[in-house]
Image (tube, rainbow, N blue to C red; front, top):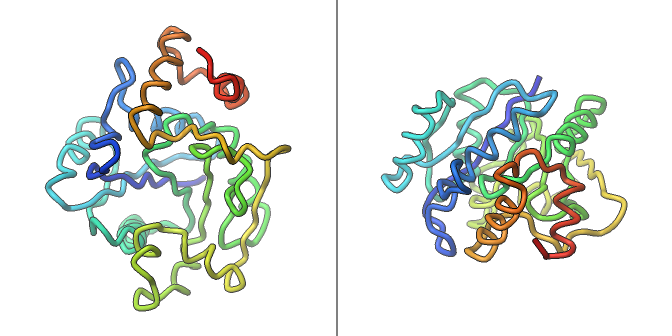
Length: 227
């Protein structure tokens, strides 16, 4: 079974505190946790956030909902995730961002199944991207992180956890699975207010049952951009 680590902080400039913004009764973060738990292979969800006072509400959310969490560096996300894996003694994990409340469990399971059947450091669907943003899957072998030294990381590589892997693919065994057509121009992630408002429209259209919508159903909505 697999552990999912959700990377989240609330100091977003484009859409402040977006992880805790609500779609009717549930926050974006709650929707993501719900979808992760629909996976056949995920048996544990951990939230990796910062020890900055701006993320106090994330910790409160975790305690209220009895979700495991780790507090670490605000800006050095790479170190924060590494320390999360050490604290919980994780051998491999699914890494997701909190701005992906529509992540489909069937895509998650496809990636995990491939990881389990091969000897990979990283299995993903974004190298190159063919799935929409917001449907990104990254399953990472914890041992592979030991190949990466903090002193060699750029500021961007510290902030974007898997960037070093993609910048240095010759050093790792990376497997990328693709969709049957290029959907990389579609975004199902919540990066700004327009994304959030569109998601709210979808939820209203489907009677607050957004978590019952499959990737294929969501794709039809996003391709038409009409709800």
